[in-house]
Image (cartoon, rainbow, N blue to C red; front, side):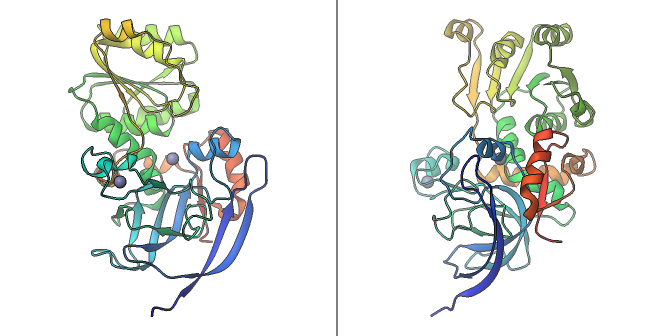
Length: 359
Ligand SMILES: [Zn+2]
Ligand SMILES: [Zn+2]
């Protein structure tokens, strides 16, 4: 019989909104099942959805270890051909069964019947090592693991398995070859969208954003930043430059009031891709008649499939010198100081604030 191996772990436990996080250190006995990997988290980043959970805007089973964006190094692994101890990796945020209709027929493993999502599961589920605000995480059998090329730094890669892979999925949904695209929201999703569309050769990309500190990076990712503070002025600015309207509008800000504006900016037959409104306060404020008369395609995108994560790493590799990926991420805070890092994340000076236990 296989003996348990012992690993030292330190992690932050979330007990519910308004309660303090608890930082814990433990020696854990871990025996891997076939297909599993134990990964040392080298660098994690704080995603907007983690902030929402901490603020009580979304509910999770508590107690739990939050955090799902990260890059790590395999420290133990069982029956995973092609991967070995010491490999630097990232992994899909969802674990799926591989046999249900979503996994097989519909091409939507991210909607698997038995879906499990890292950073969103109780500490009583499985090993409990389910989140990235931890020095180690247990990667399950149905989770896609991707080796990270040496040329990519940890800060370039950490947000790839949530924000970037989601935008790879979103951009891959565009059916036409667009000339004019409007992105509503210049946070990390929006900035990645700018870079992805720029790489595709889209000549006119406008990115609406209220935070002017973000304009410089939006521009360096290939788009024209537009001050979204005054909706009418913003619309007039874009309309002057796009004639009949945009081929594609992408909503990545999570603000329902933007939908009528986006509909107005779309050309007849245009595509509206909705990514940001993953919360109940998302009544669209448009009529069926508007959709029909304009012959608009509306597509919802939530999370991504394993192949989009492969695409994210390949995109980083192709463009590592072209776009300033590292400038999006703060220098690392100690995991122990997560509350301080969360406060910095809320200031929105950085697109992502990073955490590490390696110091
Ligand atoms: Zn995320
Ligand atoms: Zn499934």
